[in-house]
Length: 321
Ligand SMILES: NC(=O)c1ccc[n+]([C@@H]2O[C@H](COP(=O)([O-])OP(=O)(O)OC[C@H]3O[C@@H](n4cnc5c(N)ncnc54)[C@H](OP(=O)(O)O)[C@@H]3O)[C@@H](O)[C@H]2O)c1
Image (cartoon, rainbow, N blue to C red; front, side, top):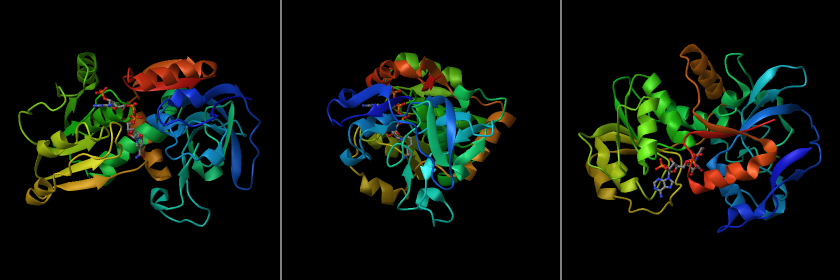
C-alpha cells in the first residue's frame, strides 16, 4: 500500500529521511482492527519524529502520522484516537508512563490503511467531513484538554494564545472563543494575525508586545521564544498551560515571578478517548470546524511536509485519498 514513512532520522535536515512509497499491508493482532484511511492530518510531531524525537532508529522504517478519519471493517465512519496505552492500563490514557502515540511504536496513519486498538475508535458524525475529522485527534484534542481539563478556562476569562498560526494554536483560538472566553493572540506574521481575527480572536499582537491588561490564562506551544512574555502577561494567580516548545525548551524560568505572583504552570499532553468524544460532539453541537490550510493527496505528502517545516501554515494540512 502507499504510505509516507521515515526511512532515516536527521536532527538538522528532517525531510532527508522522508519517503513516499510502498509499505507492507498492516497485520491485525487481538483487539486491533484495520481502518481504510480517508484523511490524515500533519502535525509538528511528524517533523519531530523525522528529527529523532520520540522515534528511535531501531523502529525504522516507520509510517508517520498520528491522526486519521476513515472507515472501519464494518463500514462505519470513524475518527482514530492516537494514544495507545499499555494493555493493563485503566483510566486516563495520557498518564500511562508506557503509552505511545501512533507512529512512535505502532505504524502511523499516513497510509492507505492503519491498524489501531478497537477501543481507540470514536464514531465520526456525518456533519464533519473526513478532512475535518482528521484534524481532531492530536492538535484539536490537545487544545481541548489544555483549555478545559488542565487550565479550567472560565467563560468571560481572557486567554492569550501564543503563535496563532499553528495547528494547536488555531484550535485554541476557536475553542476558547466557543467557550465564551475573550481571546487574544500573537503571531510573527501580520497576515496570520489578520487571519486570527477572522477566526474570532478579539485582539492580536506582535510577539512580545505590551498587552492592554494582564490575562487569566496563557496557552503556550511555542516555548523559548515566547516564554518570558507568557509569564509577564499573566495576572497574579494566573495559569500558563503548555503543550509544546517548537522554538526550544530552555528559556529563563522566571522563578521569582512564578512564586511571587503565585502563577500556575501546567503541562498538558494529547487527551483521552473520552475527551476526543466530547470534542467531536462540541464541533457538531456548536458548529465548530477545524481550520484547514489545504488538502493534499497522500502521494504529494512531501510538499505538505515542506510547507509545515517552513512555518507557512495557518491551521492544518490534511492528506487525503
Ligand atoms: N504535548 C502534546 O500532546 C502536543 C500535541 C500537539 C502539538 N504539540 C507540540 O506543540 C507545538 C505546536 O504544534 P503544531 O502541530 O500546532 O505546530 P505547527 O502547526 O507547525 O505550528 C507551529 C507554531 O509555532 C509557532 N512558532 C514556531 N517557531 C516560532 C518562533 N521561533 N517564534 C514564535 N513562534 C514560533 C508558529 O506561530 P506563528 O507562525 O503564528 O508565529 C506556530 O504557532 C509543537 O512543538 C508540537 O510538537 C504537543
